[in-house]
Length: 217
Image (cartoon, rainbow, N blue to C red; front, side, top):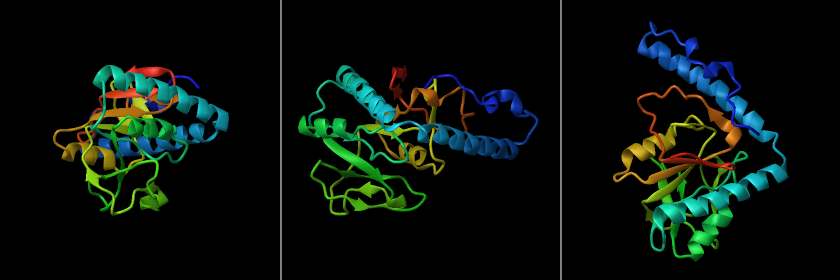
């Protein structure tokens, strides 16, 4: 894996500044769809050993970053994620944070096209199937508001913009939360992009972590 952007659409000259805003938005949407497909295909061919090594390296970096940036997380609400589609698996870190006294939560979709909801999670939580068949805490779990949140990325940029799966849920959630949580993007070094051509709804994250360390902050 490497940090180079290998796709020709990474260059801005593909967009005509004389286009209307709507035309440009459609161009960006088509480009993002193609980049998602490319980056996910690259992620899918990683071996189990490569995924495990990357997850372990990101986990170490995350623990050190949280300690240096926030100190003791006891009693603070920390949102992680349940790994899907080849995302780095940080569940061991979530379990350790819970054991250390943090209030760990996981995001889920309760209402389509609405901000995410965060439910409390522990290693003993009985998970149920949520939207897209993703395991989530059950409806009776406590609903909380995160102070710190992880955001898995399909792609990322040096200025901490995130290319997600295209549903807009994370941007919608960050826009709705006040105060906004400190949000850390989690992804692979090879998923670095020169730009995502930010649109008005895109929200910059606070930091990006990869298996190579802190990539953006």
